[in-house]
Length: 147
Image: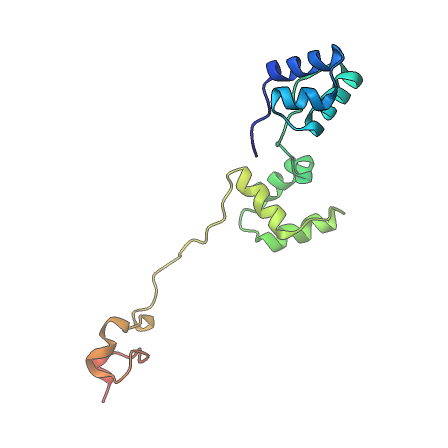
């Protein structure tokens, strides 16, 4: 999103409008859009301010329930996102899985699976050696087992 016009330019535009120049003349002189001059003049008339409104910074509705969401994870850290959503639904809070995921991402909370124990040696694939004794690369059996 582009940056707002400077307050100095806004003040000069409003000053020219207050001196009696038409909005079209002011827009042409200061090289801004006619609708921009109209909106600034309306804002000046309603609020007495020429400063730009703040932009961005939307907040998630889940931020109201931040304490509860963080307490759920503190109580049972191995819950899945779907289980958290189900817990929120039980409390009467309509929420989607992606919204919960984004909430935890904003709060720098990650869910990672931990590898307990080692994988079995027999479960390893032998793709690196597939061409040694097999006709196709699809063959994932050990080379010394091929005919």
